[in-house]
Length: 228
Ligand code: CTP
Ligand code: CA
Image (cartoon, rainbow, N blue to C red):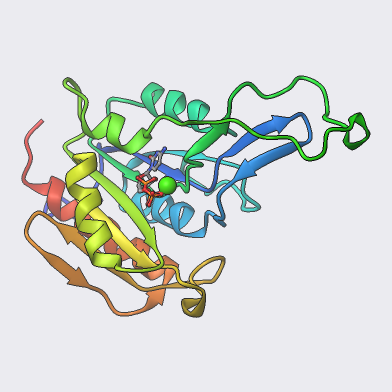
């Protein structure tokens, strides 16, 4: 875990990690959300901190404690998550593990919607949320040296992951198969493929903590030879 000079491998490196879902309000009591426990993202934040990195974890609503040794910023919506990520820049690396809601309602109501109001179920008008990963990966100035995205897919996992790598302009995509049979969603284990410009590495099924430690080591490898 230590460099030849006896320092932790990521000492002096700043890393931003997103984790958990985002909640997009419909009204003060209802929201749209993605499914995400935050387990993998929080584990990555912990693993990076264990290697000595200065970690900012930007987390949507999760039922997990704030990891020790990590600066945790709590947000609800995608737009708040983007603002918190931007505020944590500059960073050497950024890891986007959050399950960001792709859409938000166009103007959430300030008052609770009532069923009795009549007219049947409301028609929600949705607008697209900012893509936090793509926004950071395509920064003209101050882009982190290493930008890592995740892709949770239920079909054609590698095909979608390769397409996302190109579309979002990030350096790596960690692709995982979240089809119901895998039990990844909410579970403690994960099967991932690391998709880079060089190719695909398929990792064995591991605990989310072990995936996090392996990824943190790979991030340390990638940042090792860079001069700042
Ligand atoms: N992501 C993000 N901001 C968004 C949507 C996604 O930062 N508004 C990030 C996620 O954190 C993840 C990566 O982009 O690292 C891929 O997310 P995913 O939902 O798989 O990709 P999308 O581009 O939203 O495509 P789709 O949901 O249609 O598969
Ligand atoms: Ca999405």
